[in-house]
Length: 98
Image (cartoon, rainbow, N blue to C red; front, side):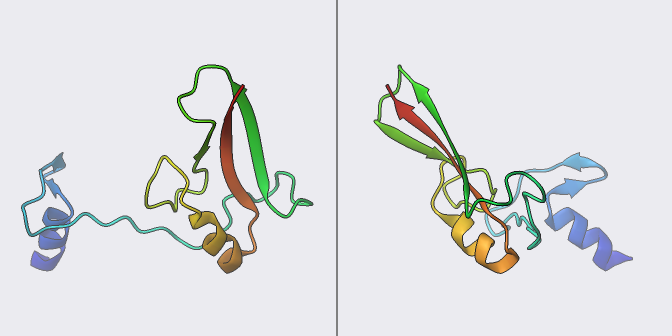
């Protein structure tokens, strides 16, 4: 039972309350390799949607929809590896300057 208590504390929780991580602790996020998009537009190679916005500082900004990006919420192309591993077809949301 002590190892469970240590595991829970190391994950940043103590008696049900969040605790800040110490300098030598790292938080981990476990992402399972399963399809994110089980049914939407499966006939397309990659589902990418674009939105035209008039007030943007950059001409194009890609936002992550697969939750695999190391630069989340911005897309870093992590969906490519995810799609190959799972057969999924998820892609980014593109904001384009008008």
